[in-house]
Length: 83
Image (cartoon, rainbow, N blue to C red; front, top):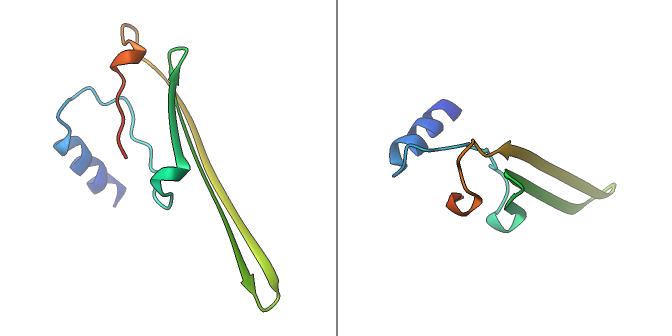
């Protein structure tokens, strides 16, 4: 479940200063972009899929966009992330 996964991530975190947890399940790391700019952390994940069926081509597209403001006093240089 999501709660168990969150507890596992928080429990394995070396630092208790976790700002956000974004679920990008179903995306490969190359499809996920994280930027830190203007006091905000932006997460963008995009996945495109094309497959051929007996009725023709089927296209699948999904994306996630999240924007999180940094708390006061947190420098953009201090932000780290992992997938």
